[in-house]
Length: 150
Image (cartoon, rainbow, N blue to C red; front, side):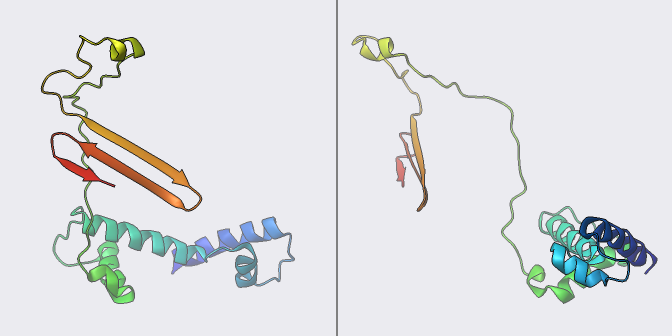
């Protein structure tokens, strides 16, 4: 509770400075006018979101009884039941090994009749995308996978 009153005091001072209100103005009224969540609720929502992200990507380590900050998982499950459902999250994987080469022929190379533009055995992928006010779209065609997606 000490942290809650400390954060509330800081946010109240900031609200007073931003609005120029008199010191007797209720904090909740200033927060509403400025579109702010009470700071303790904002911190709690960030903690719950982080807990859910770590749990759903396998980064949450539960060692023994849930005490202290690890109790947030119980609170998250009780207050937001959808977080207890299995998700479809993918852990990012970065590979910086470039095992491919991108060839962009010049106009002269395209116009030469006897020079092959695409090397023998190459995997050819054509992509295109567009964006309009109505939305976005994309398409891809690959020679290796024998697929067309629009």
